[in-house]
Length: 285
Image (cartoon, rainbow, N blue to C red; front, side):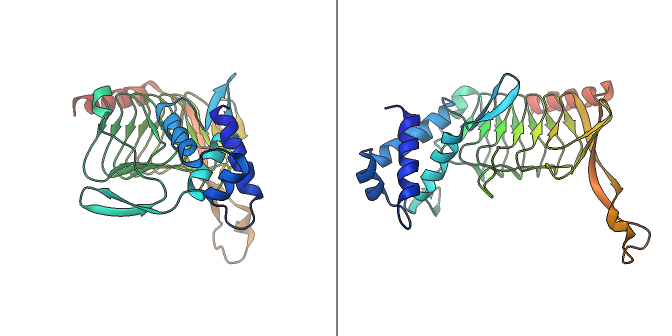
């Protein structure tokens, strides 16, 4: 049987189990060695052999069985004690082995750069401390995860992406969402940005500081002259502005009420120059 079919069988058995599923019950129902399968699954995630989502004909397709496999690692594993330096921590999934990262040109700076088991980190990546890359996430070649950044479970971050300091790329499991967050190749997120709930940031887009990107916030695309939700088109410059809210009609709001929106415009040469200068400084640091 393939890894996919094994994971699907384990997931069905766990779902049908009465109460909280355990490994012995699932093993008896499927004949599959649970621990070995879960370890092989995490190995495949780390090497990039499998992904939670991937582009197909220009659209992002979710690999539902991969999400099921991630969830099984929480429901079918016991809490264990792990050691990291002088710290003993307790979790159901340990941390990834980062010893080989230097061999592929990737840096993870001390202290507090945390890569969880099952995360895929590419070549020539810079992980600044403190930062956190969760299970199932992917960080593509040449990308920067800056200080105080979180790359959530199953999030897909492309190649040559810059995640500015204190940015959040949301996970697919906390809370459970249908589609992972996607940040495509060449994107630059300014400091303090938040990308959540399956939002897709199109390639080569530059996003201003403290911008909230979520399907609940409208994107006013001035290039195509339309309002869209859940994604930023490629090759845009995006930033937060505030538009009038219908709540402004309420007596409690003296002078009107406003809600956040995202404005997307053409990517100007000045913005590209500034991004290129920052990239050059990063390569020298």
